[in-house]
Length: 381
Length: 104
Image 1 (tube, each protein chain N blue to C red):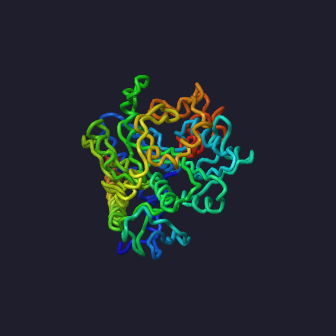
Image 2: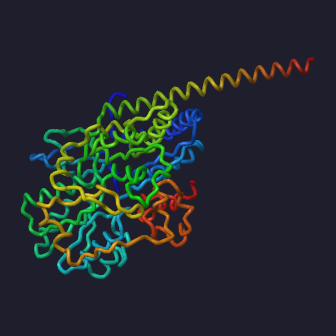
Image 3: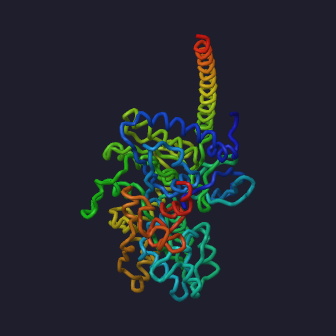
């Protein structure tokens, strides 16, 4: 090919013949596997691709997926959703967040419900829209409810930077950013004495695409080295996913355990250093962040640095924000699903009490969760 | 929510904080504040996420992947052809064997 066209970046990575070709390669290689392997796709974007394109059907019986916790909406504990709801209901507050949060139910309802009760809740495409909303509503306080993994964190950092530089007096932040490597460690080597992570079934990781664009593939170096789990950082298109799976299977056949990058067109070892600088300038680690379905995960959450406490809605509205932890339904088995010890259909409330319209567990909350994907594309499994 | 869209940069603002990108015929503005100065130039392919350019797409790596896929498909075609010829040969051999058996 002479020159790359934008079209190639779409079509060539979704080409059906290439997907089938990789299915053949994987089937041949998998014959040489000494034992079946379970690959965890960490990221909800991958879960969506895998289910949408029916990739499990193209794989041999001895190569299976475990669907990971990489959906930032799904893993948000109910008490954090309640924070958003309570903040939205405060007088003279405009709560701004990304569209993914609209329907997620907390104990009092979702942000959509808050809006129906008269709260000013706005769903934006980009965090930067907060600047205009704040300018147009000088008499109100705009609170940006920030969610997402490393992919989305630097965008919030840019907004914090602009709020400080432009001396915007009426924007605050409620930070719910979480990080990927820490939860990957939690799944295979939990420090929680109540969790038997040694029973997990994860043999290898399909590394997230766009988290890695920001953080670089360096964040996974320790997994083959310290935990004996290969990682292949893989793009979100179906051809990418099949090639990534093929690379993992080859590692097992050739008895290698390495960190490799399939998604080389955008991911390098160092990542986007400017974005990492922005994150480190404005955020610091929380000692614990409670993940819905998984519990407390050490060092996995971010908060505004103490010197920016004036911009922190959790500090300013401390007196009205609920602090009690809210557990999921007793019958929910999302924790086991996320560790690969159970499949969604093994849950007694899957598809009955727990549906995308009335989600009970974390994996049903957004379309990127394993249960929601199984519910939507169930006929493909 | 971590999905992003490959797009082509068609315009960069004078202060280099914003650009206009084309996504398969749709034009929109994107923030460049996550990219280093002069990292992005007109004609570059970039990944767009919630209104920001999050990184450049490396043309050479993208083309290398696409070339790999083409080679695999050609190889598969070649293997399929060989397999078809073999099956054909086997079929002919079986036919001959059957003819022999019938004669004897």
